[in-house]
Image (cartoon, rainbow, N blue to C red; front, side):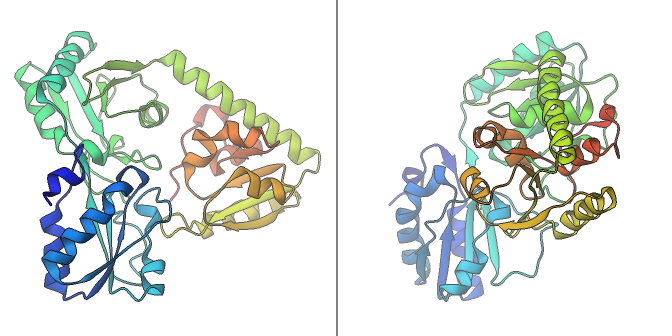
Length: 351
């Protein structure tokens, strides 16, 4: 079986996986991947077994990122190591893992003519030829290609260094936009290469600037405008005000601690508890692995302060509102308690 046929839309270092298993002498490994790659895992397992002689088990649980690695399930299954595909490592994540974990990220295949057409549109529309480039790991190798193209079209390109949770320069995560922090962006245009609105919205909120977007697969361009960012902020400010009213009304409040390996912000949860203690508000500490609205509804919670994955509160808030639950981030709790001015709103990046 040709590895190219397993994941037709992605490039994955299959040879690197085989080498890692062989060099470490693993006899049994657990293979984990996100939902978009699940269908190819059985065939990939077959290739790995033929290439190494090791037994490959497949993890069938949902996977939401490198923060959700299945190291503990690998140990429970008697595996020597975990092979996690689809995401890059999080350098600052706890290294005290139950078994060795090897990360092999997946990059989406793109047609260069589509990418170049999109970049040309960007060059023609940006207000400044100083362009700061950002992307997710699924397109990380495109940064150099995009940088060369933009420089050939008279642009000066900025690419930020990774923070504690990113593995590559220019990379952003839904929980970290550190790549923007060390850059001088006052007179720069921002360009996010990738799909979806969440990551560029995070960049826009983090920097206070509009963000141009480019889908590398289709070549489509767009922008997170100031108006769109303000709309997002108004919704979040509405949730903050509701949280304030609920707290003053003696609601059932929960502080959510995520148990996934890269989401365990126990100290941050304790800080949130201290804030509520000082203000005299009652609460309960809640521990969850996979967070879902119905689980919280069953506990009778009205307000939840989320210290697990930051995207849960921001990207899926409607699902919780439907269950009568207001979910906010630690930053938003500080605002609700007047510990932080509203003008300093930012995405939750406290790690």
